[in-house]
Length: 228
Image 1: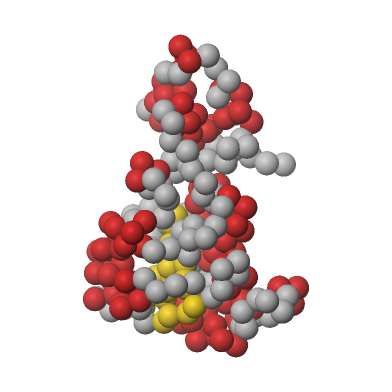
Image 2 (image 1 turned 60 degrees about the horizontal axis):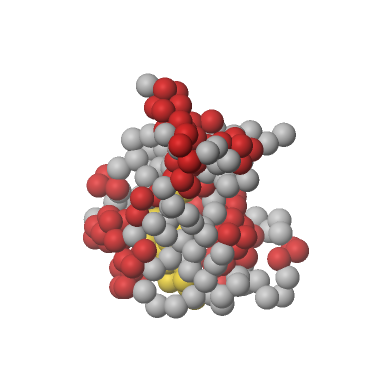
């Protein structure tokens, strides 16, 4: 049975009514395996792995780009998986180029490199052998964060990528504590805050989104009531 966050749903309705839309998915997974409370990029250095996938971080989320760059300068291991060059490549410990359309398969291949459980990925999928060094470094890190974007992806593709990233974090036990978990580089700066996105198919959102325009303040009032 599917469960939904009422407070996140109410806030999503407020977003929709203000005209803030996204073609990037995965917010439901951020709510489950997002970075833990107390996460601080300033504390990231040796022993931390930061995996950036399907994202030109400098263009899409300049604040995250600066934080990742600074963490790399302090000794964090930065892993960049992208279909094309980006400026973060200059600070990457590991770099891998995949073909467009194989974003999720690339991350799943990292899991395969640690424990081959997905023989169904197909011939087009990247070789687990090619990603073994990255996968092992990620798994062995004391702390690990994944930042995913939507380079060349829509809702379906970004959802699949987010799920693959969540699976990798779970498989390597990098969830549920500070400086570990999943971060989305949302397309809109207003949705960069954790927990602000929720699946547009949520029945609460669907019901409240049909409210007349004169009641558009109601979701925000209800959300504030729940929060405080």
